[in-house]
Image (cartoon, rainbow, N blue to C red):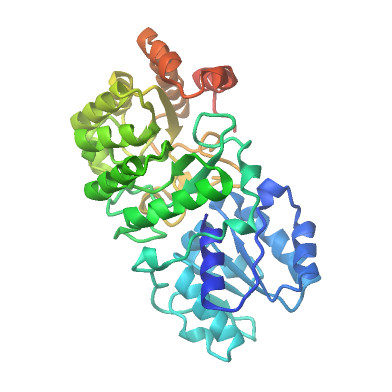
Length: 448
């Protein structure tokens, strides 16, 4: 979604032709991307990557540089935002834009092609003609009024091609689209990114409805994934959106797979979302230990969280939760509290992840300063949170990973939970496809 938003903004503000490639969806090796850049005579090639896929960037940059030497290569996305000045030292690109991209990217392009000075663009990194990496002072600017942005450039992708791909919503095939309705999160959880800052900026309910109705009219989309960091941060906006959906007679389906803040979900908001079509929601717990909640700065009110889970489940919304195990200072008692809390919740499914410190987060900085040896050998390349090999706690590896298996076994062994999964899953015929995943989590051992 970030690339589509950036493409739409550039087209709105400048006379530019834009093309988008999803390397994973299109299964494009570096040479194919480079050939595409050469074929369209690209003046600028922008590349975005997560930390776990950044290992692919050097090969892509090298291939593009060989095929289209005159192209100006710009890096962006979560990896760049987390890497700061290191990124251009490792990758032979021309510039890098950390954080939110629209305003800084426009300024960068104008400096590059209209005779300006790259040194005047706050917060970016760039390579001087002598090859020196320059880090500009300041921070890349944020868009204050999100409603001023154009709709994402959906015309640049084949949206139906995504409908058969596995997503974070437990349904195998559906006619869906992803929505980002806000940027930034005011909470201070130490494991989380800060790409969009710690102040929340939001699309209005009217702007969200405009995008939903556009996607429904043009592509027949009826299912929407809301991927905000904290969708329910402003209660009235949620109520306005749900009311508008109902007032206009839409029969949309809503999923919130990235999560809500469970302890601020009021009965009024729960009922409004359920009435508007909510069928799946992530209620992230992270830890059932009040001490760990405080240490990680999430400070979740666990009783309120459990009550919101119960109320939402009573509306037949399928609830997922996720927990993190192995924080620094975490004890067996803390882990037991997490397992007990997750099992006592009304969540239908749960994932128990081993805590992984990602660059650019306060957790990573804490480990680097206090226990740097635990970062040695940590390999992010082409991995995900289920396959990382790390233990930040003082517990032996075999103890921590045994707790992870124990948590999955206990959570999924409750008969009433299995009944509710069968009753409430939005696509019951798809359940057999997920059985191997559950079985693996119950018995897996972390491999070195």
